[in-house]
Amino acid sequence: MHNFDVPAAHRQLTITAEALVLLTPPEPLPSKLDDDSWVQLDESAAAVENWDFLAASKYARPTPLLDDLARDIGALSRKGDPLTFVKLLNTAIYDHFDYAPQTTRVDSPIDEALEARRGVCQDFAHIFIALLRRLRIPARYVSGYLYHSREEHDRSEQDATHAWVEVLLPALGWVGFDPTNNLIAGQRHIRTAVGRDYADVPPTRGIYRGRGEVELEVGVRVAPSEAPLPDEELLPVYIEQAEILQQQEQAQQ
Image 1 (cartoon, rainbow, N blue to C red):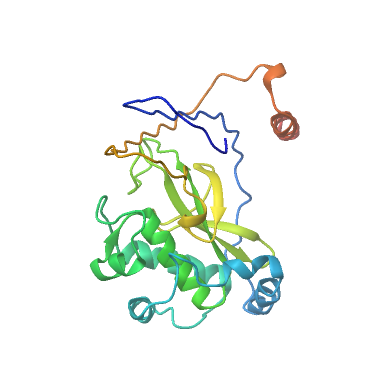
Image 2: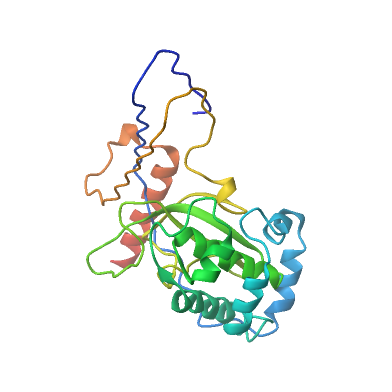
């Protein structure tokens, strides 16, 4: 939906979105990449389609406090191979920051979280992106949801949107990293949008005219669905994915 109007007087507006998402496990990552893969990364980063993910953006830009963090966690320069290096940065952000809801706002600059050493997933994603771009590593912001199972011990809140980072790596393409929970993005991560930072991907955006006061409430629920979709309601992509899964199951038997 691009726009809508409510011309009559009203006291409440509810926007409800529902989706059934088919998830497949990502390909397993190697333990490391070759040390000379930095050269391949630089060649990929030079492509015009990746320029936006190297430049500073509204919420992910260099600051003196970011330089201090880079010094503290040993991220002033590239080290080892790209995959191992990004994993170490992901863990370092997890270790150096406390997860503390309501300590920042959606439009908070990264310096607020850097100074307090606390924040939420959005802050950690912006800080991670700024560190990576500082070293000429293409990185983009991912907005979506995380399914919380009983077996996992995630720091992020269950009934909220989630944010993580995708990093361009040689031979692997875009790989997701979740600094809030010290995870590599996997089957529990439900991606809805990517951009340079949060400014590109808010779930709703717009303006309203009026003199009334506004209070926003957001609720999120992510749950597994065991019921298969009827064939006639399957979109082509679902049919294709279902056929692939069926072929894989048959090959394993």
